Amino acid sequence: MDKKTTLKIADLAKIEISNNELEEIASNLTKILKLVDEMNTISTDNIEPMAHPLNFTQRLRKDEVLENNQRNEFQKNCKYTDDGYYIVPKIID
Amino acid sequence: MYNKTLVELREEIVTKKVSSYELTKYFLERIKKFDKEINSFITITEEYALKTAKKIDQEISKNNMRALSGIPLAQKDIFCTENVKTTCGSKMLESFVSPYDATVVKKLKNAGSVMLGKTNMDEFAMGSSNETSFFGEVKNPWNFEYVPGGSSGGSASSVAARLVPCSTGTDTGGSIRQPASLCGVSGIKPTYGRVSRYGMIAFASSLDQAGVFAKTAKDCALLLTEIAGYDEKDSTSAEEKVINYFDICTKKFKPITIGVPEEFLDGLDNEVRKVFDDAIEIFKKEGCKIKKINLSNSKLGVSAYQVVAPAECSSNLSRYDGVRYGYRAKNVSDLEDLYKRSRSEGFGKEVKRRILVGTYALSAGYYDAYYLKAQKIRQLITNDFLEAFKNVDLILGPTTPDTAFKIGSKANDPIAMYLSDVYTVSANLAGLPAMSIPMGFKNELPLGLQIIGSHFDEDKILSLASHFQEITNWHDHQPKQKLLGLD
Image 1 (cartoon, rainbow over the protein chains, first blue to last red):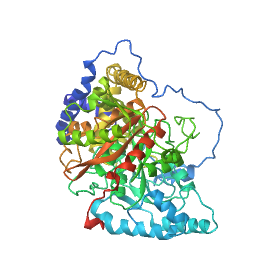
Image 2: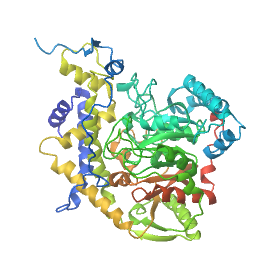
Image 3: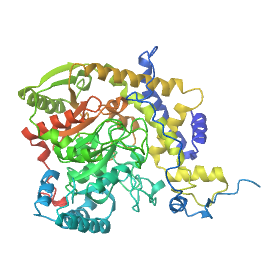
Image 4: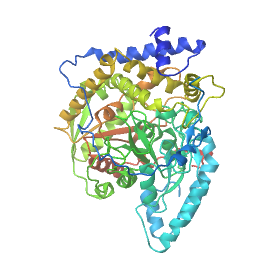
C-alpha cells in the first residue's frame, strides 16, 4: 500500500498519521495485505459467504421502550455537557 | 490456600472451614504483595470485595448458599462493571465508568462470587502478547522475561501466579486459549452465542465470545454453568438450553473418537510434537480411537481472520469519537480535528493498524475482494469442521505452535504476532467451542492441548479435559517463583 492510499484510508478512519509514522505504517499494512492475499490461492466460486457461524437468523423484538431514559447516568462519562447536550467545537458559523 | 482449586475452595466455604472474608482478604493480600512483578491487574476493587465478602458470610451463616458463594475472581477489563472503571486496556477508556454491569459480571455476582479486580489485557483485545496494553505489559509467571499471551494475558497470568483462583476472558481469535496455553492454566472459549456479550466491549462481533480461566477443567465447568445461557439483551445469544457442565465432569468417562488434523502437526516443532503425542497416547490408553482428519482450508484461517476481525473492529471502534465518552483531545480547531486527534491520541499503534486494515477492506471497490472473500473462506473452514465431526467426537491439537516468546521479540513484527494464533483462529471463524489445558512443558515453559468441539458440545470438551486431568498432573504444576510467594 502506497503512502497516498494510506493517508486516504486514515482520513476515512478519522485517524491522523504523522509524517514520521507514515512509512512504517504503510509498510506494515502492505505486509498484512500480502498475508491476506493468500486467500486468493483457492477458488471460492459458487461458495455462499457465511452469514452467521450457526446459521441463526437475527432475532427481532417488538419496537417497545423497555428502559427509562438514563441520559444523566451516561453523561457522567463526559466532562463537556450542558443541559443534557454534548459540547463540541462550533460547526455552524 | 493458593494452590486449591475452585471445587476445593467451595468445599472449604460450605463446611465453614474458611469464611468468604478470610478468603477474599487472603487473595487481595497476594495481589497487593506480588502483582507488581507481573502487572496482571489494572484495577483492584478491595473495598468492594471486602464489603461483598461480609455480605456473603452473613448469607452463609444463615445456610443460604449460592453456586459460587464466596469464590474470589477477577474480571477481564473488557467487561463493564457498574461504578468500577472499565478501560479495555486503552488510554481511550482510561477513566470510563460504566453505569451498568455486563451480563457475565451480573451472573457471577448473582452466583455469590466476589470480584477482586479487573485484569490487564491487550488494548481492545487486539494482541497475542499483552504488550499492546496502555497499562503496561503483563509478564509470564513462569519466566518474567516472557509474554503471558493475549489478549486475556492478565486473566491467565493472575491465575497461573495463584493471585486469584479463576478469572473471566474473551476470545476473538484465541485470546483465551493462547494465554491459557502459554501460562499453563485451563481456559475455555464456548460456542459463539453460548455466553451473553451484553456489556462486553466489542472487537469483532461475528467472532467475539466470553469464557473463563481456572486451574482445572472442572473449575471452568463450574463457572461456565453460571455464565452460559440466553440473554434477551444480546441479540446474538443462543436460546440453547444450558446443562450443568460440572455434573457432566463428575460422570464416568466413556471413550470417544478423537480427530487429529494433519494440518496442525505439519512442520510442528519436534519437542512440542513429542509433548502432544504423549497426550494422545494417554487417550489411546483410555480406550479412545484416534483418527487422522483433514482441515485443509484452515491454513487460510489467519488470512481470513485478518480481514474479518479488522473489518468488524473498524466498524465497532468508530463509536470512539471523543464526544460522548472516552478520551477527548485538547485544544482542537474543529469537529473533524476533535475526531481525528481524539482517536489518534487515544488509540495505540496496534488498534490503529487494525482500524486502517479494516477500513481499507471495507472501502468502496474492495468489499468483494476482501470481506466477502473472507466470509466465503470462513464457510469452507466451517464445512471442513462439520465434515470432520461426522466421524469424530472432538478434535485435538496443540493450542500454540510453541511456548511463550520473549517480551519484545515480536512486538515490531505484526505478521509473526498474528501467526501465533494459527491454531486458534479457525474455531472462532467457525463459531466452535474450544479449550486449552496444560499438557506438558518445553524448556520449563508450559504448553497447552487444544480441544475443539462441535457447536454446543462444551460438555464433551469439559468431560474429556477433566478426565485428562484425573490421570495427569500437568495442571497442578505451578511456577516456582519466590517473587510471587510460590515455592
